[in-house]
Length: 355
Image (cartoon, rainbow, N blue to C red; front, side, top):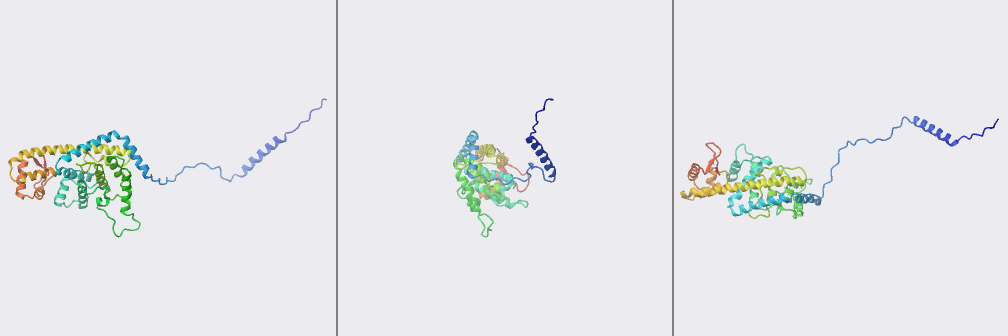
């Protein structure tokens, strides 16, 4: 019988098998320990975003201006045409457009003051029982600033008629500090076109902490003055005459400037068309009223050119004529179709020029 060769067992393989059995046994014994960590969804709200620095904010507006260069040039041309018309026209045109713009802005800000109520308040300080005198005062301030006075970038405190109270609390940031932040931004944006700078200033108004309950009116009036800062005839640029869509917030600087330019172009076109109409009416009224003698007819014609709506007491106060002379001339002009009564009432009547 042939002897069998010796068989050698691999001790290494045996040790591996025994180790695996031991590891499995150890894992079975540790059943009470928690399993491996798994990624869980983060239900915590996001933290506050870091405020962008001033350089980043203004750079976004510079990019927006570059993206709308063609439309910006067209809107600037519309504004130049309006500026030229006002420079050649009578002083009353500026007041007329300012009153119309302030009344339209009041509907955007929620005060909703009509032109006839505003005209009575400005000329005679008359208000109805249901009128909000605080709202009338705010819109009256807008008219004063749209027709002259210091600009917002010259003296913001005087422009807003706002001062800190003497007993200001330590927690309240002084108005001078808040105003300086906005003015610093405007000073760094001098390379932007005045129309773009006005748009940026309007939308940065609230972020600078300048907003009050009527902050939209203040911001809009400040922007209207800045946009026309290079003009010689126009004290302000109309923003709300063609609708207040350009004043709507939301979106990127590119989107906000796009709405701003569309709204401003529509407002400038509306203002120019209105001046065309009132200029044609004034020429027609002057030609027909040559038959009348005295100083009341030309004075009354000037009042109707300056004010969109006129009442008999207003005309009497503004022309320094007698009540009888005013009523006689108003009746004559109405018979000739130069003016028409708009209230349909027997009392507190208002007249406007018929274009």
